[in-house]
Image (spheres, rainbow, N blue to C red):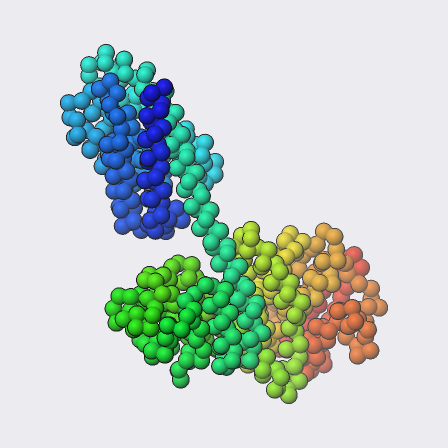
Length: 562
């Protein structure tokens, strides 16, 4: 019982040391798989030194030293892999041998410590059922102590003393070392969950900023829009200062208190370089950039470009008052906002063109923007933020890509491959909403991919097939896009195996007197049909075939150059 009590007391002291260790950034990078070779070398030494501390904190027991050295090297192997475990074991094992060369268990415990780090890495990763498996960690810790007992019996001399020691030492050592390994793995899982939660909160924060700034930036990067945007970002992100500037100077600046001065920052190297190159710039207190920041009451910054049509029109700067205060999450926030704001500015410019343009084709293109799709997409992304932030991030990219292509009307024609990419962006969001109810199949000639087609010609047909063909069907269905090129024409067909419709309804879809538009059916088809006829003649109109319970197929042809 005294042996149990003493080992548990050491376990508490070792826990304090370990809690301090897991706060190192290199340790956190190890958990996420981002650790460099230098990080692993440092951590090997730290785990080895933790084993040394465990040896010194142990206590004599019948010619041996009862301690938790095995826990330290086992954790090194479990978290860093065989090389880290082996290196930590070498540091702690050689030290154990050297401090008491002639001791009963010096050689056996020194050798066992080296083996323990390697065995822990190999055994844990072979047995674990999930990340940070506490039960497996306990098993590894106990097995490692069994290995040490075996080495004591094998190498310690005199053998009679070793044989007398092992039965008394084995049970307490197995239990406490196994429990210690399991407890520390549980602590690590808590740190990892904190990091994942922080990422989820950051994704939620980014989406909230995007939603609040969407109506603000639709009129372009004006001083008023910049002022409102800077305020939203600073308040939601908890930053010390936010700056939005263009080539002429500061458009807006929001600070946490009056002592922070942003006038000099706008002319600093970091801002001017981001404007000139369109690159993401980061700075801390070191160097000339840092001295500029320090003179303004700031000590770290990240500046990202705001772009429109691939041209840098301004920059967004995020600042903190503490040195090295801009961390990984701040960098991710800054780059995410850069992409979001750039897309919002492009959307705003296209919306302004839509208001000013008199051309009928522009109006027809802009009419395809469906605000309900945006709201539904945002709701879908918001739900994924809680369950899978990675998927939410990808869906945001798809949403931005979809609206960028939907509102880009500069080109008279685009390659079919670009139209297919637009459909893919739309389908990625719809599949996230309806999952297995929507399936896609492509039958595209490779030679057809480069053929020019009018922009926004496919997606409305795909959307029509999903909304009115597949989704009303309880089991969902499949959309098939096919494209075949011959000598004179590009033949395109969009078909679904949905609910279909009667011939009477088909006949009335494209007529001017059709009432189907009140049901949401026919508007997109009429726009596409009118554009095809205006561009290529009446003989290039849409052809619609449908049968109730079987599905609908819409086809058309586009002339191609010889």
